[in-house]
Structure formats: structure tokens, C-alpha cells
Length: 94
Image (cartoon, rainbow, N blue to C red):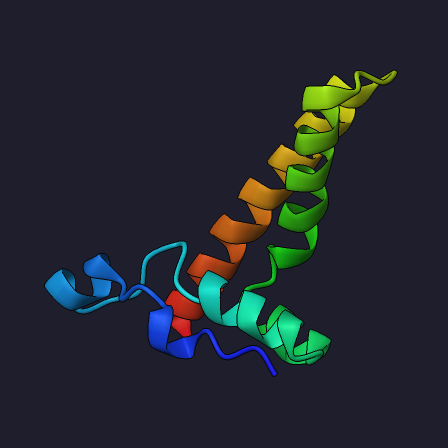
């Protein structure tokens, strides 16, 4: 079993200002994915399921250029940013 919790970085924003940043939950979400808890990973950080394909396509596109890769990357990036902002706002008011 993969144990990465002792190596997770603390949120500097939360430590200094006392509230979560837009990236809070990403490391824990990745940890939950490694442990196979996909629903909890989504609840922890909803943008995880758009960020993973985004970085995969960026990595593949670095070595192998394929048709419409820039459009796919742009759409995934926009979707990721929107999901991050919306989930941050929802988390702030709940």
C-alpha cells in the first residue's frame, strides 16, 4: 500500500491566513485515487478528473503531436479552472 501522507506539503495559505486556497485537497485527492476511493477523491477535489487527462494529454503532446491537441488542452484547461473556482466558492460558503 502506498503511503504518501507523511510527505504531503502543508498549505502555506491555510497556515498563514487560516483559510483554504484553491489547491487545498489536491494532494489528498491524489492519495485517495491511489487507494482506489474515486468518489472520495472527487468530493475532496472535483477538478482531479479534468486535471489528470489534461496533464496526460500535455505530456503525450510533448512527444507526439496529434490532431486537435491544442483544442483538447484548451477545453480541459478551461473546464479545470471553472471547476476549481466553483468548488472553491461552494467550499467557502459551506
